[in-house]
Length: 142
Image (cartoon, rainbow, N blue to C red):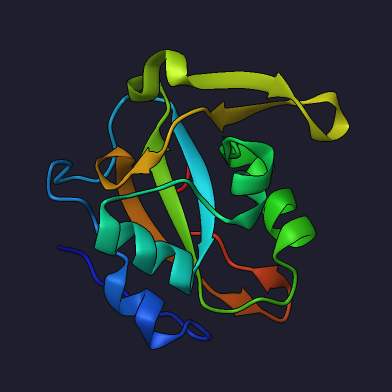
């Protein structure tokens, strides 16, 4: 199990972000997509084993994800100034037909999940600390 404390990360995120045991190395050859959760949203997923997502996901009827290339802009646009965030990496390929790629911000294709997000979908989770320059993404994010 990997545990990491980072500057500016609240203890509840640093203590709960970990590799999921079914992926001992944390990375597979699959296409990873990313979800940013606030501490209470990540805790709810861990407690219940599944979630319909954050309030915006509930309103839109699907769980919003970003690619690695899109995640930084997503953090800046929707989570500016927020601390205690968790970055979840999920296997988009394993979500099958429930994952749709749809045009969104800037006419780019974004991954949208049309079912609940399951804890078993999560490959790894890392704290997303806030620095003076914005959120600091983990080096292993591909």
